[in-house]
View (spheres, rainbow, N blue to C red):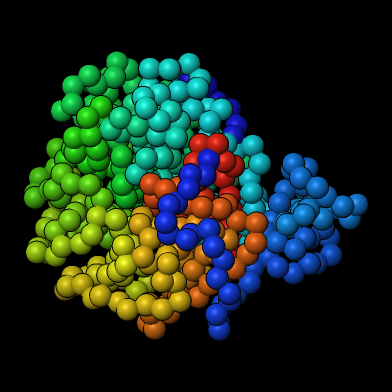
Length: 411
């Protein structure tokens, strides 16, 4: 297994206008747009020494140059339970240099048999991420169908700002369409859709179902990965399982220590301790191009995408509400947007291409644009999901593709 630095390529997000920047509506906020002493620029943040022009005052064109200054906001669990991070000061977009995934991608680094049809870009095919808050790293895992055959884990570390491959692909590869395992003991590569999650109480990754290599058959299996043991475990849960369908939406609720999942027709929960699924709501059809996020304060599961916003109570009656929203029509109409809850504001913050992120007030249904130049460009055309994750200190990390650096967006 090899460890190196680098990450992220941008694929075009066709037809959704995600790369366009809207004029700031009333109540919108421009981030990273003002210059301050100590080496700030006119746009998002950029690390000192990165490629690109700088002036003699340490200003990077289109960004806030940190010139070695970093946030002192560490201090253990002072940020809602997140470890202290060594993040640059300033607001807006920060391109994290030398964090491309391609150089450490198994397809390019000793395992050509996993390249399949799409090479390293196939890792991102309809696949998500999960933020491991204990180690301050955003995990990327995916592939599946004919896109990519490797099942390795990648990590964007925010402690040393690097991209590494945590595991090598499981070999031999599955050679039958109905297999969901690799090497007999690991989950095969798959389109994870929105089901890759980090279970904080158990220090495990969770993934359910997905589109299998090499034929795209959909599975109904449940896996967790133990960081302590560096090992995958196949579960045999009791209770009714979500259906083997594409586009399953899920998020983890730390309060109840349960995973909430919605297939195309019903809402479920999963409890790791009892290894059991529970059917919560039937006859509730949704589009399969949505992403889900838990608002732990309002106690809601919020689904966004394909033109709709649906809100489910996590406790008591789970009957959904269709929430009419304003201020981010293009984002709501897009497919598989990135959604994350930001504790300081108590709002859901979303991104799916371009310079602007959007925060949602669940009470009013109003999205507020958070505008900052020098963004990542178009979203990956097969979805963002939880590769946009809250990472502490009012900051969000984004891994958008194999040949593009990762980004940080700071409020």
